[in-house]
Image (cartoon, rainbow, N blue to C red; front, side):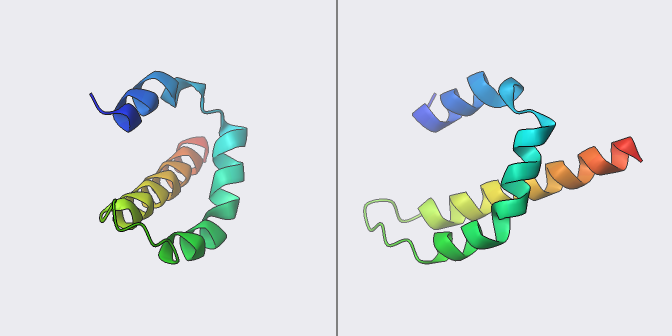
Length: 68
């Protein structure tokens, strides 16, 4: 398993609603910063970060739907 997948697998349960809210609040700025990343050794990094941001946004939305 890759380092990132291993990290996510072992730490996903530690994400609290407060952490999710904080990250979701910062997503617009983070997406702008992701677009500016220049990492030729990691050609898929920006796409992967954007996918992660979309996953956080979707999870946040689903969490709020469950509460309502």
